[in-house]
Amino acid sequence: MESSIVNDAAPAALNRLLTGLGSRSISVLDLTSPLSAATPTLELPTPFANLIDFSLEEVSAYNEPGPFWKHHNIHTGEHIGTHLDAPVHWVTGREGKDVSRIAPDRLVGPALVLDVSGEVEADSDFLLDIHHIRAWEAEYGPLPRGGWLLIRTGWESRSDSRERFLNNDEQGMPHSPGLTAECARWIAGESGLSGIGVETVGIDAGMAAGQHPPFPAHHFLLGNDKYGITSLRNLGELPPVGAAIIVAPLPIVGGTGSPARVFALVDAS
Ligand code: MN
Image 1 (tube, rainbow, N blue to C red):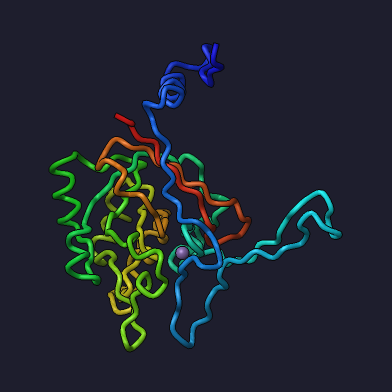
Image 2: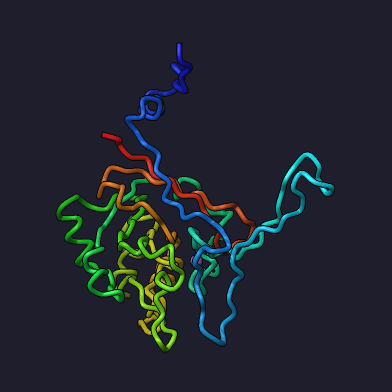
């Protein structure tokens, strides 16, 4: 008989999940971008200092420094590739949590997918506003407490090109979608969401330095113990409601963020 991951002694609710995973009626999707030296990363304009890109440094590879093993040092900024922004990343959240102190139950919850890829196709500087969320809620119900709002923009289709992903104009100004300040303030102050997830390089729009306040998603969310995840993929595989998300950043002590693995659980039918 085929071995099963289902444990008859498991509590009923968890047993249903394990049965679904075992029978493949629940699928596990990877929402994470592969992490390599080629991963597109945020480029701040001068005079601001940038993080380093991700890279691997070989220490041994089944050779003299380590004849039976291969291992690397990794070099990376915190905010590289698919990653989580913790409250202490932003000046408004400086008294808040570092990435190691975020409660795990805030990192697992309902995934709500709002698709604005048509709007973004027409306007790279598209800003999600409260009325888009209200329209989504009219169709699918109120955003649940502990949920993660995942903003589907189609930006993933640019991820094989750093140039198209960052989308800088001739003056070096990036053009990519984000949130209005009012929407960011509403999510932070009025919604019960744990955070938002985006397909772009950061949770704010490319032009967000010119918004009031500057970088409103960072300003309001991180200042209100809400979190952000970036550079997500495969949001097109998720239903608007009904999926679960698991966000797994490294517990870097004092860290302002971390590359994260992000999974979704979805009904396969
Ligand atoms: Mn970040």
